[in-house]
Amino acid sequence: MSVLIPAMAPGYLDTEWERVEVLVHCLLRSQANQPPEAALMQRLERLQHHVMQVRAASDSPWLRLPIQDLPPLALDVLACVYASETQPRIGWRYQELQPGNPQPYVTPALLQVLLALNTHELNVMQQLTSSHGELKRLQLIEADGEGAFVPLRPVHNALARLLQWSQAQMAPPGSYPVRQQAHWDELVLPPDRERMLREFIMWLRHRHTVVGTWGGAMVGGPVALFSGPSGTGKTFAARVIATELGWPLYQVDLARLVSKYIGETEKNIGRLFDATHGQDMVLQFDEVDALMSKRGEVKEARDRYANMEVSYLLARIEDHWGPCILTTNMRNQIDKAFTRRFQVVVEFPRPDEAARATLWARMLPPRAPLADEIDVDFLAMAVNLTGGNIRNAALHAAYLAADDARPIDLSHIATAVYRELAKDRLQLNKTDLGLLASHLPSKVVGNLGD
Image 1: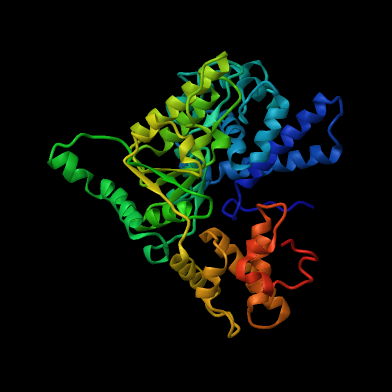
Image 2: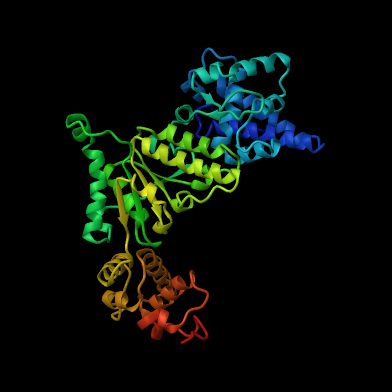
């Protein structure tokens, strides 16, 4: 016997998303000429009964939205529109049902068959979702145009109100939160580079004085470019800046912005910046050399659109009222026309020997037992590693020592460094391990070349 969950139980909105997923599953079976199983239909009936209870409750979560004067069908539409954002797998299923749609969102045409709307209900749904319809007027959904096959998307702020997300939980479209904090005393950089990072923050802290009081030119951003080899602290520095400001840091996933469909990339970029403009948050774009490389000769239509996408991204970053940090491992690939538009450009060098000693001292677990032979100055001199390499090797050595039930010694360090270097190189020789080569256990590698 199914037990109904009270409306205020944790996860009570999950029933809405589960019902949508069952509807999608039934439709997929129907398209494959497979009738839904009896158990599936019984489950759908129970879910629909529960959904009606939740919606009718005096403390219904839907009452957080301005839905009081809307017809009941509006909540069915909202549930289907919001479901792909709360449960990404539903968005993937939407794309299965409408393969010509590049976005994982429901369309009016799909809503018609998904909800099995009759003629009257279809008219109501079309009125609700039209460009002048109530759902758009109340800023509950949005769309890029009008028509049966135009994807309907949730308005970010409305979804956040429904789910009671704090700003820290409201990852803008195409991004994800970086929750770890970092502080200046953890940053290992040359003093002049640290000074440049602090200057970046000055653009935010003194904007009112320079622009408002002194009449300086008003620009967006500020925008910084962090360049340097992998593992030199670019992302860590972004965390330091966000922590210093007390703002959340969001890392933009360029793979979610760039689309093979003409025009979709610009739409995705627009949604990201529309949701973040003027908000107290830091946006970080990784590996921007892929987008901001030197513009090549236009040989076909796709080349022209690619250049337009880059220009649009840069224009939105420049107009954005908030800090943006772009990172790259290949600064020489960035078009110089772009770099002139950044307020700060910081080159992150590989750590020198003194910096490596500091990194080893910080990265080895502070309460881990160390063998007497462990000397961070020796480790720093032995192998030229980046901060990211040292972090990984120090932690790997700790796990090796824990498995051996003894203090961390040079054999653990040598093994961990060997594993770290082997990630990027198909073949290693003794010179790669430097002074650590003699401490590498024979069981780790049978024949390390000279």
